Length: 204
Length: 332
Image 1 (spheres, rainbow over the protein chains, first blue to last red):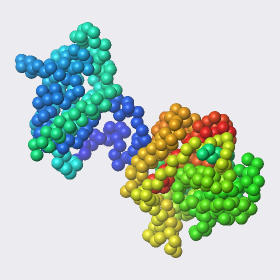
Image 2: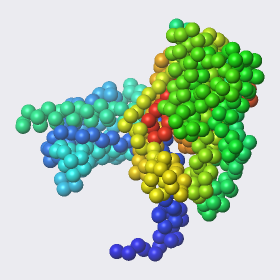
Image 3: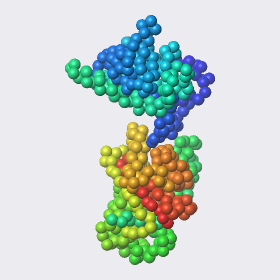
Image 4: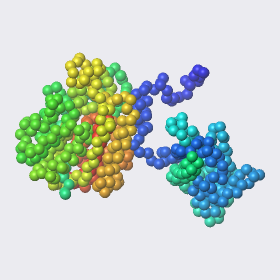
């Protein structure tokens, strides 16, 4: 397939034809800092990743089973399932008696597991946890899984769209914790890693 | 033991100043990233030597601090990028020219762009463990005129970055401006990533028709940038920790000045404002080891460094073989 001619009409593309190598190197150096404020890295997206010494299929299946959130998450507890709506209901204990709703969308071929969630109501599932399991063999040359996990900073994190649905005495909102998502998710990822590695090791 | 004191600094810059056109015309390249950081630089002249530069700088230091150099210098420590003779440093020649009477002379070849801090640390060891009471530290950068101005090298845009100069400091066993702490690190695995190369592949001491140049292994450029971004903040924070200070306690940062990106990154790493980082990259270029004392003098002479300032010094050398940091409490 040849490059479409229309590229010429798109301004400011950085391609070797219009940006010399030394200018590219300068751009890259300019973008490379010694330190980065937390916001620069985790402002609008929070992506974390971890290696887990457990076969990728097993990791995928564990993540795809929604009830396992009871194990590896910090605070999702007391699960019930509404078959008609295909919707799980948890208590998210960081929010006291807050209900957290979840619908899991898993694709076995791509090994993606997306948790479509929301606090307080299950009609608009806007808190979306995007997980992808990658076989470690081709990317790290060792057995096991790499798990990628991304959240995007949906505008609702800034402002609760359904305040009337919240428990009356609850003061916090899930979005208040966005600056701590990296830390919180990293800790939960370690839970996931420990559980899977423990069980996988005991199976061997 | 009481910390040694940095009593004062002085410098000498060669008269010959060249602008970017000197390199632009030779290279035939009009715009290049290398031309953007440095606009002017001094080049050592043919009839000048590292020794003669040091003599002038030390004479200025003696004038500023009212020293009798024959009496008041117990230790002389030097570091020269490209010395006057291949086998020896400049210590003995400087001593002869100025009629100094030091008990100890050391010509250091390590430390490169942060040799000033290695020299400070060595001075501390000597002043605290011998009868010696005072030392002159002498940083000489001569490679700009001696290597990077040569016909073959002028064509390369990166040759516009180095600049020559001499920075000297006077330190004493006791005094007003204590050196609160020093950190020096050697990273032996990075020792061979800076190369002295000639186009015909000969060693630098072998005869040939082309100039040798100093360059970095191209395959390691990204890695060297990453090293600078990591090693220097590590050293700066180690010095702060040893001194029991936080970055908010730092009034001024003085580092070596290889390029504007490193300067920005090191300053950002300790969260200082641009005006708190004293540097002369645009007008002096990369002064190698002489940068720290020359910039210190700049900050003191223009009144920016006021009494009761905490000065954080730091940097790294070559391709990352040495890194260092120090903190001086400046009381004037």
